[in-house]
Length: 311
Image (cartoon, rainbow, N blue to C red; front, side):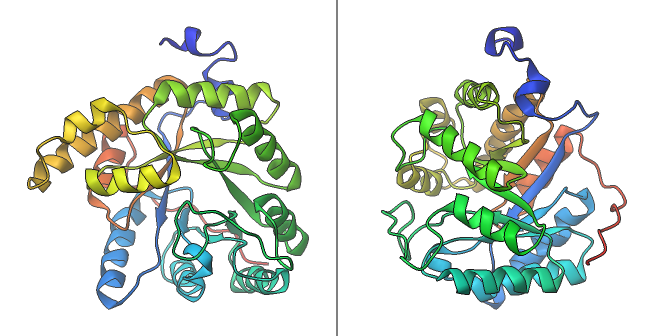
């Protein structure tokens, strides 16, 4: 599909940003579960830090299960690196007061960016969500609550292939509009592999009048079986061609890495042709694939930009 065929709005209108000589990137990490995983996390952070990403985010476990570890990791990134960290925050298993306390703690610590998500129930990725009566009901309310406490930069999520609990794409777009009206400044997409479907989705968002940047979420495939399991639980379609690429490679990790880097790089290159220049990488706390993909895309090590001085 050519740019002219895929959008009457044009590539820059679709991406929501101006053209750039090189792509801009951001990275997602998860808080460590123990000393060994903490060592792996910090190896990945130090490896990717010289690429000077726009920001790096740290996830928040189902049911708020990683609250303390997320806070500790984000604050350490702020203090010990040149990176600009963003903390994930969810609504589940907490009252408004408890969540507001977390938000205020982040502001007091110097964090200026939050990724506001509804979140998954404890131990149930993609499971049915039941809001607490005394809590924030959804990510829209959470976004408004964050902005009421302090002028954070707030990112929110979008599902290119329909949220598992949503009746339609149109409903998802209305939800995104509500998040933006509540103060969201960008949206980050869930990972996907259907590029044409993603382009159509973003076109519909633009036609609905939503102008905030939409960052495509890129998931390098380090383990196809793990990816298929995760995708099945959250409603992400795995195309047959991708399964074919990884067929017979279960015991061949080095070839899997080469294939994974090729697939992700080709996806990003196609999106660059369509006018996108911001990419959000789900690193799974590993740097090798992401670093290689960024290099092929033209992202180079450069001096860090000055951080904003915390108010």
